[in-house]
Amino acid sequence: MVGRILRPAPGKADALILDHSGAVFVHGFPDDEIAWELHKDKRAENISHAKRGAGSHLPALTPCPECSAVRLEGKPCTACGWHPVKRARPVEIADGELGEVSRDRSVRVRLDDEFQFYRELLWILVEKRRRNPTIKDGWAAAKFREKTRRWPPFGWRGAGPSLPSPATRAWVRSRDIAYARARHSRR
Image 1 (cartoon, rainbow, N blue to C red):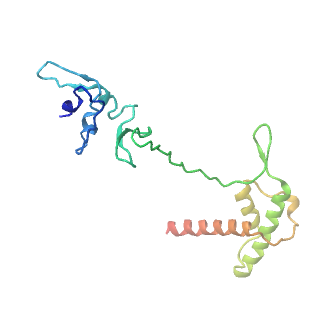
Image 2 (cartoon, rainbow, N blue to C red):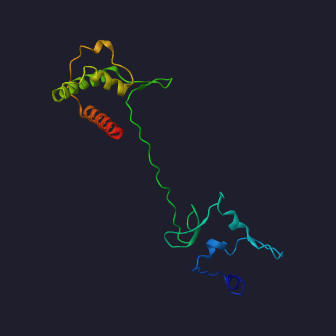
Image 3 (cartoon, rainbow, N blue to C red):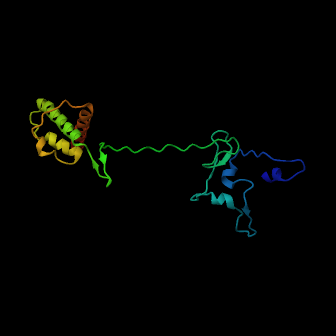
């Protein structure tokens, strides 16, 4: 029935097509190019709509969220001017330590920060021993290695403990929780 309203007539400048059934999504726009066939076993094909089909790189037809006019996916609405907004992609977060990056892209953490971290681990070791005297001397060195991927230098053996920062306490707590969960899942 769209053909009737699209017929040219004197004084007619434009026409408004109301598609209540969503036929445009199945058949395409009325002004799309159609490849007509005279063979009885072949159907006419809407070339533009077929190119927008599944697996195509062309945008599909979709209703505008503001005015419900049909628009091409990813394109602004020609009726009301609504523009699609790209969804924010999640930002990947990775744990790490601040350090100096050299030209060869290797990262060197400041040694004095590591020394302070080791001393804070020694303080937490003293606290843990009050609750559980079986914790060994190597606990602080093992935790240091877990975070930095290397053992503390031999010269740090005589270092005294230092009051831990909230960040160090939080990191040790996270490692304790991970250890407890791993033990629980093995049961």
